[in-house]
Length: 234
Image (cartoon, rainbow, N blue to C red; front, side):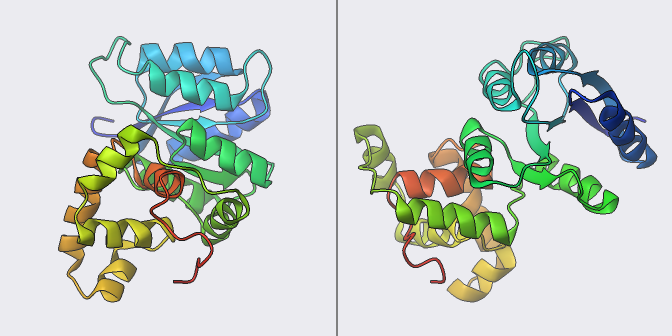
């Protein structure tokens, strides 16, 4: 299966892992390279196997999925397949509450889906995060925006201010659009530029803000005070 996207499944329920394995391996372009029954195993397996994507449960024994996500992303590249880029973390859980959404994103997850997600949508979610895009559904984006709207403004740290000073006006415009959860096509229409131009700006934003993907751009845009959380429809 040369060229397949490799997947590590982390879940404390054997039946769930078996179901995910059957589903993932049914797809011609995906391959399961390992399983973990707790967060600690997920960290060690990720280091050794270097998967493209980790399907990560949140509530697991020994170490939960949020801490495992942080450790995997902090120590990526040390496995047998190194040097390798950090795997993308796709959180798959039964819990659709705000605390887990925000905690997963801040831990570095690239996407968040529920275990009752239709099979084809889960497979597509794996492909989306593997490609470097964020998987933020409109409902999750709205709640993320609402959370920052409720929270007191966070002053940008000195380093953050320096980074923001390096952004062009157009890059700031694009960042605000990304923070609102808009796709490249929607940003293109809103700013009257080509999709190719939007992609270029997003790539530059990822580099300048040292963000892993669009999900991290969303989080950073609010934490650095660039976005307007009290006007999510703008």
